[in-house]
Length: 303
Image (cartoon, rainbow, N blue to C red; front, side, top):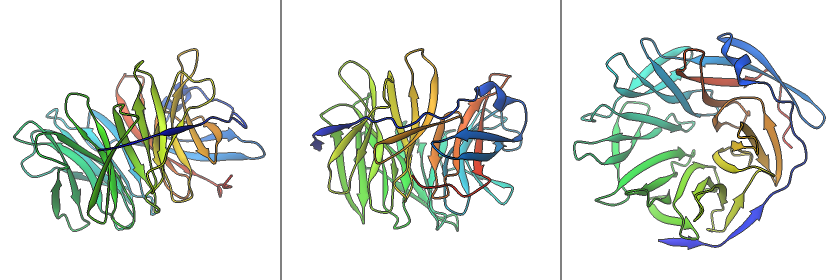
């Protein structure tokens, strides 16, 4: 186990105009506007809901616009999905016990995620574009979750038991586990340089985001004034995304680059690609979860 010291990144330079989540529940497809320092960005918002599903979640998106996530089917089983060119394809790890989650995808269409096995542990998996599955476990006797994969095939996630989680990266087959100062730590995203992001829970049970560079140096990330901050994704342009809870208890999504934060009026952002398309999920009027993809209608200016 490797435990790293941390520094703190906390600098606000502008807050976008917030659009209430309720407005997102009115249609399958519409446009959002978010005001940044000197531009207006418009997004096409598309609901993702595989046929016959009762709940859905979107977690990852690659640079080709292919989305992965999970849904609950009519038999109340949790399955992964790939959404590409308007079509859904289910992902179920062979022999899994009613639970398969697809969490990340790279530009080669290799998908990573996790499933519950017959031993009642959660195991990581990778599945290639031709449907070949590989189970992956950091160690025996603990659960493994894979959330992010880059185009080199390196991946990140976390492993543990009974809440004692450690983040990990697998770089060219070499596994490194880590925590932030010994606290429960979850890694969720990885970029082309093998930098990772995620969150940890401190001794006071407060959630903080983190950025870990490829050398192992960890930087704590807290949205200014927020009660909690969680980082969920990072693209190859070094843009980090996640969400924070403000002092009034409201949840907001954000992007961050080089210490500069921007709130985005999109619910529960989980992933981001290099074109700054977002995926995530929201709660509908029927109190059910639905995945979404929010795609920029114009070129995004990298800040």
